[in-house]
Amino acid sequence: MEKLLFIYNPHAGRGQVRGKLGGILNAFTKAGCLVTVYPTQGPGDASRAARELAPQFDRVACSGGDGTLHEVVAGLMELPEGSRPPVGYLPAGTTNDYARNLNLPKRMEEMAALAASGEPRSVDIGRLGESWFIYVAAFGLFTDVAYNTPQQFKNAFGHLAYVLKGASELGSLKGYPLRVEHDGGALEGEYLYGMVSNTVSVGGILGLPSDEVVLDDGLLELVLVEKPKTVAQLNSVILALAKQEYTAESGVVGLHSSRYRITCEEAVPFTLDGEFGGEHTEAEIAAVNTPVRIVCGD
Picture: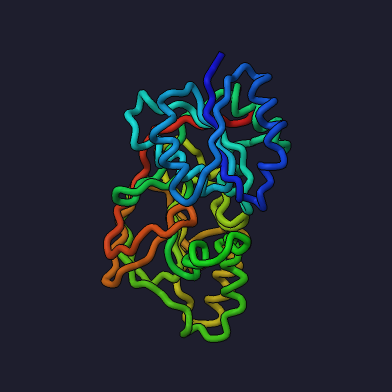
């Protein structure tokens, strides 16, 4: 009988896990697991639980928003590679961006059964300095909303095009003069938003086309939005974001690279998986190959 550690956020998604806990535990048990349940007690607690408890278990399952998964993976990354059990994810947050990559079933009990017995696959995660992110590191226009507002407003990334469309004065949009080095060279410009990701969805909307994202290819995807200087450029950016067609001519750049070096004269605030990731004048971002195994659907 496998030993399974179930870490869940009792407040995520309006507390939906609490009402389904019996069915989830029953599904784990039916799959042949001996289950230990750990409800998180606050920010950072999922990381601590994963770091301190996971080596005693054959498998870890977690439930909450993408922030809970982020914390669990960050905790596992503090362990030696041989001590990291595979992870099953039962998304129960507001947007559940990373879950869109995993082809999970719809019902909680079915997700629990898959988490307990499904085949894990290795995935890349990102590193910014000494910090980890599972699906996105972002900076610029309104990214601070994700960590400065209540949970119900944490889909701010996906409303970038809407925010741009409502901008009454182009001069009020803050841009950052950046140099971005990547595997294929370098580019420079003034950008009002950027994200380095390994996901098809940020905020449920913004991202790269799904056929361009591979979770274990050793590459991270970059989207950069130039600061528009005319209404025509603004409309071009909005259209490119809506259609996910990123070209230099559109004002939205899309790249694939194993690493990025982003430099700016002023400190740029970053978010990592929707949480504050510090301010940086120089950000070294890299894909870390296959350090964590996550259970996926068919």
